[in-house]
Image (cartoon, rainbow, N blue to C red; front, side, top):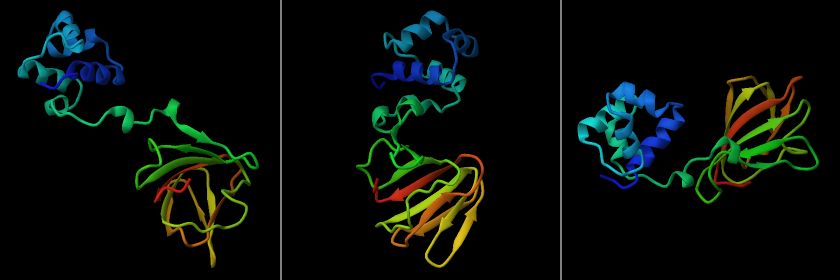
Length: 182
């Protein structure tokens, strides 16, 4: 069995907001046994592992496969890197762990009337954006298009572009950019 399987079980249980007592009731395993499993003192049988996996709504192999370090692939909401340019009210949060890969994903919010930049700008790469709340106007060289909540837009970043919040409330969007450029 992979080392650290017990801590993986505990982390998943806590992420689901479950107590060890609740898992005990769902699996029929004693609290003592589950506690020892979570502390990697004992290794559960395959049968017990299947019951634990079912209680946590994951396949049993989830606990058997060694995966990447979660710190290198998970960005917790409270740990997002935030950038807020001083000259306007846009707030950008990096949703990917860093900018060293081929894809950058950001969440940004614009106050009413605010824009992502002073004038349409071009950059290298590709970009896809989905509006999560509010509405934004995408300003492109030959056209302007208003994007409502749930709408998305994709463009080659060599095309000069600018996004402006044209609503009365804060607008937010998620944007995937390749290669990273922030």
